Structure formats: structure tokens, C-alpha cells
Length: 373
Figure 1 (cartoon, helix red, strand yellow):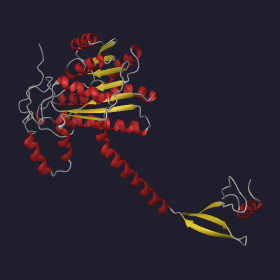
Figure 2 (cartoon, one colour; figure 1 turned 60 degrees about the horizontal axis):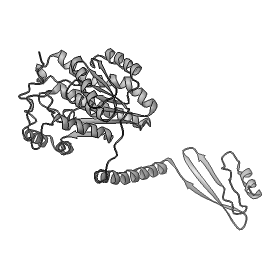
Figure 3 (cartoon, rainbow, N blue to C red; figure 1 turned 180 degrees about the horizontal axis):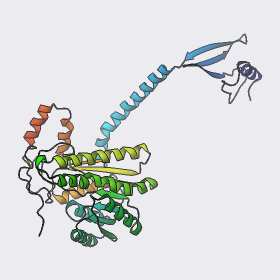
Figure 4 (cartoon, rainbow, N blue to C red; figure 1 turned 90 degrees about the vertical axis):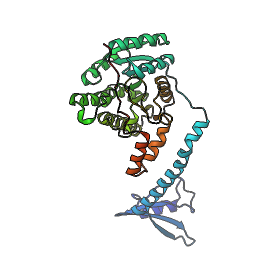
């Protein structure tokens, strides 16, 4: 209970701006009063004196002091976490990484009818996932379904979908939700390339490149992300490209679409983080050329530094990154160094390095995937 002396002091000073004591041991009570005078907060501490008079100590805690304290604490926090995050990759490399279980997860892969999309479907089939295959090529999609069954998939659903068409994406997405359920892992893999110099690229092909390579990501996420957010469980995977991190001669429209895809995926990741949806993960994949036929004719000047990736290797690395919930995957590893130093080099040094790596001539002999008659 509050002592009579304390109560008298509170009544005499006014109770509107006084904090009541939770416990009051009597003469040794130290009531705190906080008064605000315009822009300055004054903290008044009363100490009992032998002559029963109280001496007051005024401590100004103004906006400037508060700002300085916040700056100090925020800076200290950043410094401590920076040290931890700097050494975290070393700890993760030494310790075995945890991989999530995707058995029973509903995995939707766009562009599943061939190439890396088909190979990822087969990897997910081995892991016991329910597969939803999207492609504009019905024959290729049916073949992927047959192979997935052979690799152990229990539930496989294939749909014809033109990912460049927003209405078609929404229509087929509604069908998937009704017939299969809510997608929990979305792999935006479908992509095309014109392989022409910008000035020689027909307008319809430029538009198609943007629609398939990036706008389709908007529509698929609009269709399936709300359910992931509602359950705080899901994974959005964007198969982008190393050409989405640096411009490449002869790939203007393709690079623009992949830059956009990476920016979109990063923004979605930050939105989930800001909303507290930490159960919705994102993985952004940026590979060099993969030998699937899409970039037939392209050559690497120094294969020992920048090798053309084999499809099986690339698919396994992508699946492993998804299972580890890795945010970025860049292949081959040498590109981590290239992109790491790119932003600290001068423009002239960057051009010198690009010329050394053959970046100006990657597309000189491009043929692309030859369509079967």
C-alpha cells in the first residue's frame, strides 16, 4: 500500500501527470513524475531528505537526446549482426544444412514440358511432391507427366496454359485450385529468347519475351500467393538468369525481362518479410547458359571459368537450393566473384573484365532451339 506521506505528495502535486507507485515501503518511497513542457520531457526524481523536504533532480530527455540514443543502439545492433552474418556462411558450410521435406506439397512448374522444367519435375517426383505441370506444348507436357510417374510421383496433373496470357493464367489457376488444391511451391520457370540484336528484334517478339519471362510471374503470384500468405506457408521460385544481373550484347530484351523478374522476386520477398509472413520463402536462380537447346550455338570463351551448365547438374542444384530455402542461387560459382567485384570496379575496368570473359561475343553464333517439324 502507498504511505500517507507519498499519497499526500501526489495529491499536492496533482495526480494527472504522476505515475502511481506499485509498491510503497513508506518513507523510502521514490515516486517518479513525468511532466511534458512543450517540446521537452522533464523527468523529476524526488528523494526524501532528513528535514522531510524533497530535493528535485531534473533530467531533460528531449527529442535530440532520444534521437542520439536510438542512433547509438541501432548502430550497435547493425555492427553486432554484421559480424554474425559475415561468419554465418562459414558456419553453415561446416555444419550440415537442414533440408525441408516436400512430400505432399503441391508444386506447380511453368514451362514443364521440356528442358530444366521437366528435369525439376522429375526431381520433385522422387521427393514425393504432388506435381502440377503447366506448358503451352501439350505433347511435351504429357511426356513429362509420363516420366514423372515413372520416377515415383503419385499425383501428377498437367494443364495447357499460355503463361503470356493473363486471363488464361487466371482461368487455369482457378481450375488447379478446384481440382488439386492450393499450390504451396510455385516455380516460375517458363521463358523464351529471341537471340537478336535489339534493333533487329520484331516488336511482337519483344512483347512476347516480356510477357512470358516476367509478366507471367505477376499473374501466377497474384493467383497463388494469397493462399500461401493466409497459411503462412509456401515458396516462390523464380528461374531468372545471370543475364538478369548484367547486360549482355545481343540479349537486350531478354536481359530486361530477367532484370525485371529478379527485381519483382526481391520485392515480393521484402513484402513477405514486412508483413511477418516468414513462412513464405523465395528463391531466385541466376544460372549461366544451360545446355538445354535454348541457347544452342552460344559459346564460352573460357570454359574452365564459365562452363556451359549441364541440365541435370543445374536441376539438382536448383532443387537443393529450394530444399535449403536458399534465397539466391548463382551458377557457376565463379559468377559470385564476378558479380561481387563488378560494383566496385570503374566502368572501364568492368568493360575490360567483360571483354576478357568474352561477354561481348556470347551470342555471335546463337541458333537457339530448333523446332521439330
